[in-house]
Length: 119
Ligand SMILES: [Zn+2]
Image (cartoon, rainbow, N blue to C red):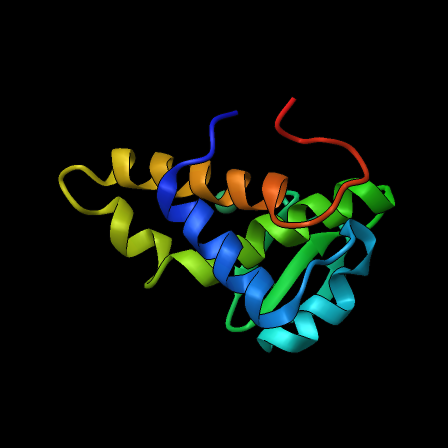
């Protein structure tokens, strides 16, 4: 996955502000950026951000949970507004696809996964 310049800039800024984070240290990261997390059984998607709380499906393994937490944190740091509002625009599908890609990039590149994510 190629890291876009917008996400790269946010990754650099957030690391500068808060330091690097190991992937499983997401609770401390969420505290710093002011988000909560709640595990929810039978969530229809793996995770979603709702009013300052990341809802994550209960029962996911620790690494998958961490990845989705950073994905939703990426949406929080990179994107304004509600996805439903963007979807209703004429080119909403393209905007949402770009936002999803950016959130995936953030989740992949911001935390230290203990591997070289770029390889
Ligand atoms: Zn997303």
